[in-house]
Length: 103
Image (cartoon, rainbow, N blue to C red; front, side, top):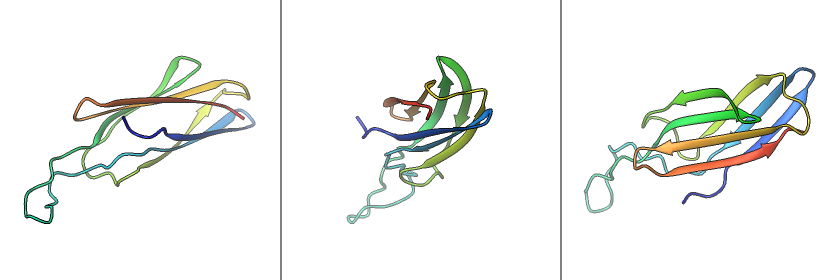
């Protein structure tokens, strides 16, 4: 399983900015290794975000996203102490989910 995501959720007024740094190799399937063999595609396909258990965002990604991707988005109505959960699913079926508390 991949390393934990680094999630920061900071409230300012009625808006909360969520910043997520994910640890993933994100191979496109077009690169070749030292012996000339194609490195198989391996990338995050779906991102989900929820606020206190309620879905607030879903994103579909493809192989063109960079290694260790960064994501930022805003949630309206979140306040300090609320929980934000981020999850991803890659094209190999690997999953990761992590949670942060809004500060």
